Image 1 (cartoon, one colour):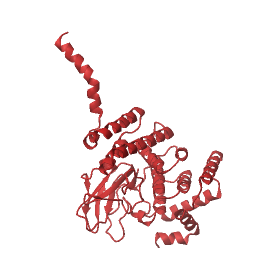
Image 2: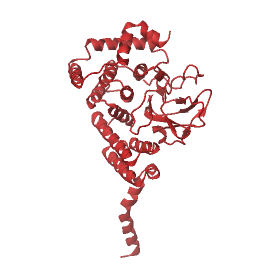
Image 3: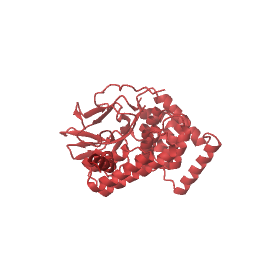
Image 4: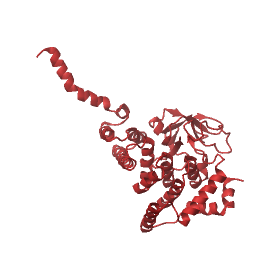
Length: 203
Length: 161
């Protein structure tokens, strides 16, 4: 066999390995130990092949690393998010945006039922679900019981409430401190930062 | 008149907010019955029960009363200001989904009375924390707590379109 042909054959044999190494996320390589890195990478690969967003999974792993969690906990958290994203994808279909899947996963993680999320999507078939889902997650994470949080969001959605109205509902129900959250005016004793640009809703 | 007074002046709003702020315990069976009824109502027609009507009216009143004010104004894609009061801190970092949870990415600047930083974020839900002096994790006291898998104080912000 001629040397050139032999080299080309070797390159072809090594190509899958090279592609696999290339596919590994550099952030995971840099920040995770080999054990959890391999496990998380497998979940990321599985998500990619299933049409799920991979960035939320990588961010979850990086969050765990940053917070000093042990390997098992990091992998468990990523696995849990993978499951919730999968559920959200099944509920909302292939057209759902990453932001909607992330918000849905947060709501599921906080205790919302898949059936309630499915009903929400039927109430807002032409509008994005990111804000209502995120508000539902916020209400649940604040300790409001599932049925009451769901009823609040359901009522708003069934009457065509805007995203701003959902956020107002959340601010109202989760206590006075929440009224000056990110993007909102600072507390009265501090000088205002001025209005934020682009506060109008898109049509 | 502040927001609480406005709520108190409106019996319907007052009842709604009071109920939701002081929830009663409901058993699993009752929950199932409620959800079954909700599903049934949904199939039949849009929400028609008294509770639904009352809540819808309350929501409409709330929007009419508060809609023109900054209350509930969403954080938008134009910029989100994160702020924390930590007078004795030497360094405060913002760490979250938007910066790969990297404490070096978004340090806050000390201002008059508080630390702050403004980020441009795409629409979506982001979880985050503050890290004070490199070791103390703090949630944002101005927002409700967020779900967390690692046992540290975490907040969430929703950026609307």
